[in-house]
Length: 385
Image 1 (cartoon, rainbow, N blue to C red):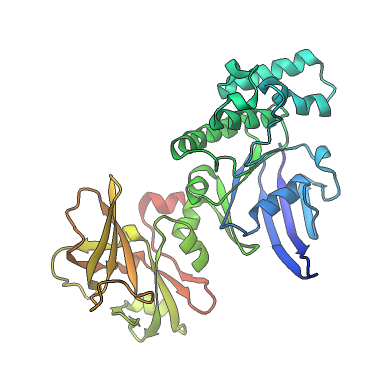
Image 2: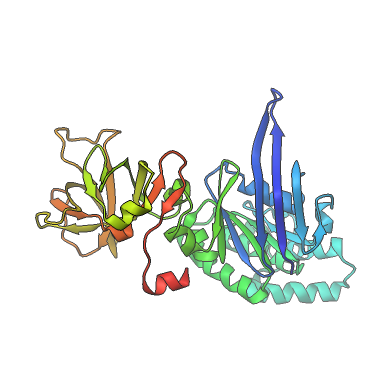
């Protein structure tokens, strides 16, 4: 095991026209010994490139990578004591499961065949594939192949595990099962793990901490709950959470927030927090919107039309719009998304009262995108964060 430190790492590619493309831009993260860190972000944000630099598969343009106190920038991949699990599994098709899992040990160690075989058998039992050791990859399902790829990494007992979207080729049910199994494995092995995904569900459920990337830049590092409840900026707020946070752009005018669609009164305390800031974006999580079929009486409640209801079983996702003469929704029209109890009788033709609680509001600078104020947390959530 090892503490892994990324110090201002940058990766610049040059395209066919000799133009520089910055894939990773001055990223610094410290991953503690035994920690499970998830790199998450949209496609092309630089997360896989970052992982490949740690693995030694990409050269670093600038910055340093350390394992404990040792700088590994110039070490070849085979000397880094790092094991990587790829999205494509990368199994040797002509080898059996046993051969695939043993290959790395045979090439990189002087262990006798008996000890290698014992390690492979022990790891296969841990992964539940001990009955498949004599099969070839084409005789295995996708989930079984993924377990073999994991086993090949585990038998090496590396300082660091790197995982590059290892579950993306699996169906939804198997992904959910493998998420749980990976967490159990990592806790049992207690090995530093850096896990790359674009799936925020994986990030939220698996990581001790998550690092959010966008356009090669690090946006925020924190626990899943910190990134969800206290996003550092508009990007993190919109990316973390499903459905996404509602965003409403407007201005602060005295004791009110004014948008194109409505005016929302704010308290003296919130006005004091926002003193000197005028162009803001309000954020509100879908679960924090309060819906009622009664006429709005609260000054913070809006009259809106339920446009679409998506039943999800335990909850309904409700798309809300302001009244307009058009049946369709214009691209520029504000749509709010709420999540409500699955047994609610709100239908797609109802007009509802939508209350926005001030204590649940996030406020961001529209100019910089940075958070000015995050929602107020109470009870257990605040203590956990």
